[in-house]
Amino acid sequence: MITGGEVKESEKFERSDWDTVANAIQLAAQNTLDDDRDITLTQDVINALNELANSDDLMSSEKERIRKMSKSMRVYINSDFDKRIFNTPGELFPESDITQLDVGVFGSDGYESKLVVAFASLVNDINRIAEKNQFSARPIFLLIDEAHLFTKHPLIISWILKMVKMWRKWGVWVWFATPSLKDYTDAASSMFDTIEWIICLKIKKSEAAELAKLIDMTDEQKKLIASINGAKGQYKEGVVISDQLSTLFRSVSMPLALALAMTEQSEKAIRQKIMQEKSCSEMEAAYRIADDILQARTL
Image (cartoon, rainbow, N blue to C red):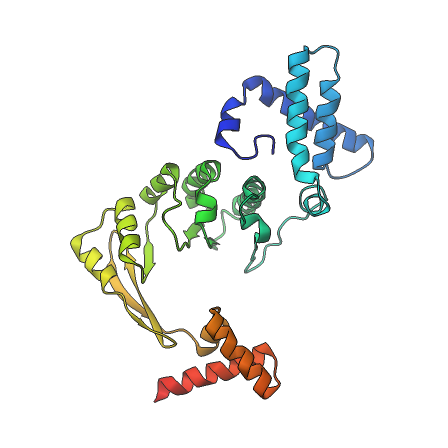
């Protein structure tokens, strides 16, 4: 929070700063206990920093540095929305079969620093569950959609690279799904050295060229990617690449899944037209579209 997840700010952080932050966290925790509360919040750490900044034992330059830390953290609790996210007691993720987290507005421009903090919290919780269950035979799969939103941040990718290596021992497997390789930083590109499997759907020539810069591909693999095809509403093709395997595959999705995944404006218009003509809900319209897809397949 103090550095905003920015590399330049992190590089300015000195050992004395780490000591100050550690002291502030300890003081905030002690104040929480003294107030008979269970959870230390962001505001408590800010108050602790301000308390340290008022110490008579510090030079004016040290006091100013601590006050800047406090102001940097306050950015995360300025609005009511920010307070609900970063300054309220939270709960650990339950150990469920599937946990889906939508980063929402934090995926937008201008929210990068808050995305970094949210992701760090998520990684820590996954790490907790993985360490606890490391002796079980059940793996954990972490699927990150729109992964370029995360991997373009050097601090996030540095965490990911370290976690991926350690998580292998704990049965955690990370899958990155992204429509864009352009936003991958130099640090993120090194991540491809650890990737064992690549699944590639139909892409443009320029995107194939970007992929070729990140991994070593044979001429045969390049030809496979160029041969990817598909039929709208019927099937999609793709290529699987690993050290042991390079092959074309065809995915025939369930009609209802295809109907629900129709997000283009023209597709939404068709769904809306059915809703008006049949006086039905959007879900019922999707079922009707799914029936049409199934009927077309059987012709």
